[in-house]
Image (cartoon, rainbow, N blue to C red; front, side, top):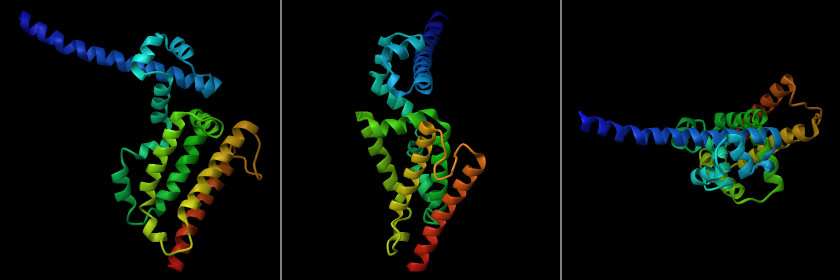
Length: 223
């Protein structure tokens, strides 16, 4: 009986340690998210995050290796482009039949809604334009690798046409980024479009559909 209890305790302790570790990591991540929301990315620091999480700086270094490691964890949770990594094979299979036509529209709409609703992504967008950090370079490289895989779905379709689909998507994504960051910093319409207005948001979504569908139709007619 004593041996059985000893074995049970040996099994329970590692599980408790794992749960405690995950809980502590969660506290650090949530504390960092709250600081970004209220004060911005540049206000993140080891002392401030540890204090907000109610844990020691040593634990932050033990679990994340420092602020850069913690920020990478934040990005994993919030950067929607990285969500394609886990399901890339399934995504390619699902959208291969229409050469990525539906995916192109869905991805751009998702990009708008995620960036519009997530304060961290807005801060990240500003940081990308104004700062050079190793983790930002790594993030950009990961996004580009993902983009290469996603564009592989449509490359054959546009190969013999005058449509350069990557350029079209770059303009769409860049335009979405600018509209949202302009709204954050200037809080005013751009070209008469107010992205904080629900009707204007619907018009933008419809415009994304029109642009992507027109590209596919034009390529079809000119192949």
